[in-house]
Image 1 (tube, protein in one colour):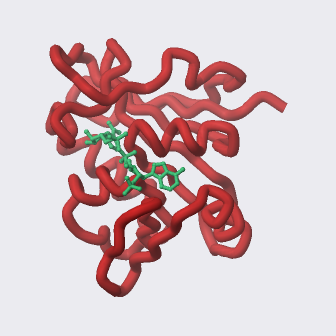
Image 2: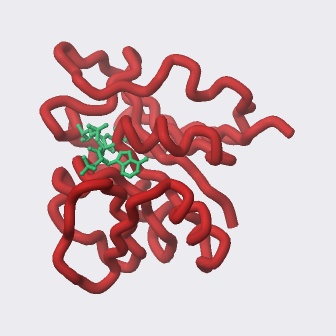
Image 3: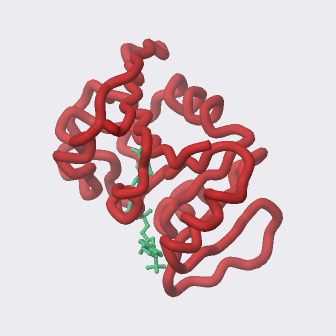
Length: 159
Ligand SMILES: NC(=O)c1ccc[n+]([C@@H]2O[C@H](COP(=O)([O-])OP(=O)(O)OC[C@H]3O[C@@H](n4cnc5c(N)ncnc54)[C@H](OP(=O)(O)O)[C@@H]3O)[C@@H](O)[C@H]2O)c1
């Protein structure tokens, strides 16, 4: 059981524009679903709004310091990173950190593994990015082709 970052990144490190994903790749959405199903996903409030609903068959954790979300099954609202870390020790399965950019930055120091889809594009006027050094201290541990000219690399934290 691990805390795992999962992200799709363009060649210029862009991950978002105007509160949305700047591309649509069915193969990446399928890969995301297959990877996270049955596990816990953790997202920032902006990403929660962007997805628009709780994703099925997963515990959806939404991080927000200020907002309230009406009760619904499968959704847990947490205010502090520390609470998410406590939760990670008691759940079955992995905790996937699914973004966006603020949340990846907040959780960077506790992420043990990254699952990264390489998007073969650059995104003019993107407004959400990964930090240039987010894979520093990690070593590539696997690569898969998922179709639509996309490759997914996994990176494991160095001991
Ligand atoms: N390419 C990808 O794989 C991918 C994945 C996910 C998202 N995205 C994109 O990324 C963009 C959104 O990223 P973003 O950085 O703007 O927003 P975000 O990280 O999704 O959410 C930011 C919000 O989360 C809350 N938050 C942040 N850090 C927190 C902490 N440590 N503790 C508690 N709450 C915390 C705050 O909510 P409050 O202000 O309510 O307190 C903050 O305003 C969108 O364009 C989205 O489509 C891309």
